Image (cartoon, rainbow, N blue to C red; front, side, top):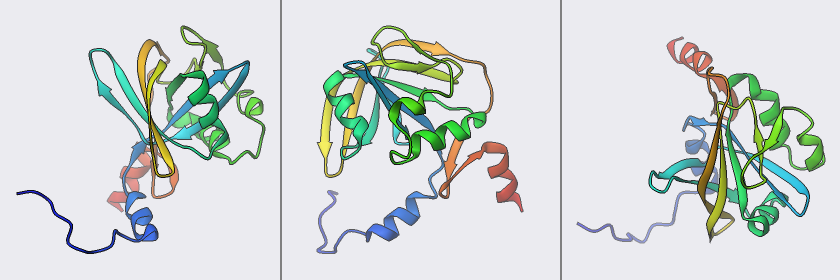
Length: 177
């Protein structure tokens, strides 16, 4: 059978938002550099797309400052955060509370193939060339071909769940009580 429209309106924004808060997601920082300017944002809407060639995608709000640099520079890093990166995630999630360059003052940021900043102690940092941008409503899907990968020390990942950053261990503890 084919799904068909039943005449009902989509879920209300608040209902949808409350439901999506219950989807536990890994936390990343998507970063870029264009014309000498670095910018980045905290993102949870990131996933692998293909193995050969290796590609991933990241969903980014088109009204944010970083989007313009990502779209024009056509490079990005996707940095998988560990639980000890909570403050860094908050810093990059802030709506321009600090300048973009101030965000990069914390952490060991390096450049490899594309020129996008990579976090040296991320669980893994993917250096990508943006090969396609698909705008949809308020966000764009950025598809990146992975040019290089940098591995940091192994440790527990940072997770976003129910509107906060958590460790997997703390999530399990809360569920069991």
